[in-house]
Length: 79
Picture 1 (cartoon, helix red, strand yellow):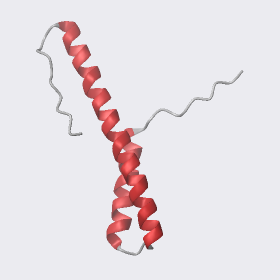
Picture 2: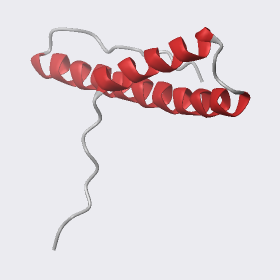
Picture 3: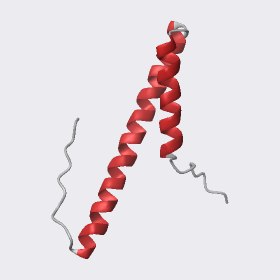
Picture 4: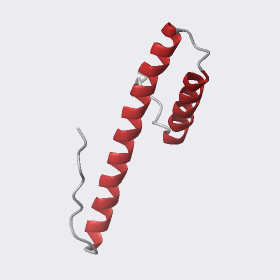
């Protein structure tokens, strides 16, 4: 049996794609429908990038705490 796995999230690729979307929207040459689709995709990419950053911060905190070198990190939740 083959497991259906998604490719691992590529933060740099997502960020690059987000920058391209913003650039194309700023150019003002997209139709309204294309702009809405680009905005929707941009929101999705932004949320994925935020989740990846939060996960990385938590992993760093766990690694630091294992060595006992720091205090607990308090992350602010914007939502």
